[in-house]
Length: 386
Image (tube, rainbow, N blue to C red; front, side, top):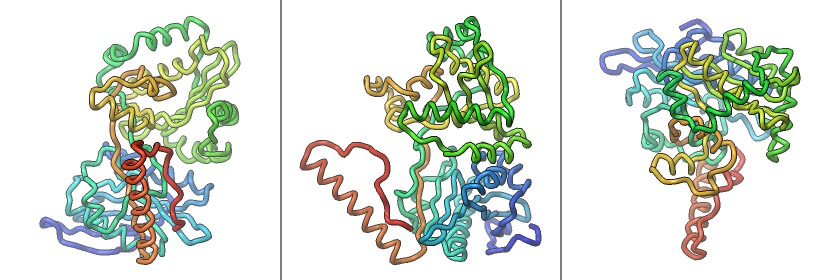
């Protein structure tokens, strides 16, 4: 490791020497290359993503694991100051190759040490999508169920490695027809550049207004920071759909490792019958396949929809609407994502968090038993501030 990295601990594991390091370097090509080489890696763990998040007040710390001097795992923590102290979160990590329980235990120990060293009020961890570790490894280390940050708990994946013919056979007939109609009815798809970000953000805002939501990120400037950080490395692809020279839809996508992720989409609402959004997906899937990517990730799926499909149940009418049902028209496989957890170093805050969470559980149980109806899922309740 380099001079600016601080060694946190050393341990002999399975005949090898494991060392834990703390790094605060802005860019670390070793870490990014390590992520790109494993299915567990994700763009939100890259140092490039950390650079993009600086405009929102986050800065990175990386806990890195070496085994006999070679990088074998780690996690990037994004930290931000609040008026109540510093908080941190780890999104889609730790990444450990191989996924050995002893290595994970060693890393978790480093996370706890780092949280205390940096005086974090809380550290939220969301494991990698493909992780095989269960919740027990976190519980036995003192982590609690996360009720602070809401993450997607399921997603929808398309197998690009199977080939475009196989992919299209798995789609609804109406989707395949829409691909053809978009082309026949004059929709043109082109790749966008930095000068097109303003246009794309306008489309995104229009979509969010129709849905009664706020855009995330909330500013055009934030999108520009993402572009500046990730586009030079070839990790961003902006697509725009036009009709007679007017841009009417766009998609902002990430390309990292073996995966392409659909991140944000925007549509003016015009020319629905020309299927501009289908044209964007068709272009992106073909491009991803041609460039050797193996997986396309739609970037989220409601968990109840994913569970229904995985259990072989027919979707009720209430689940046959919205973007999830539209995405299911492309085929694919639902995946349930690992649960997230939080570590709270301060014993009093940890006790308060446990008590608050226990109180919510009891109230939900009482509603179920007395009222006969389960509490509707409405997202996470307001948690005690860390």
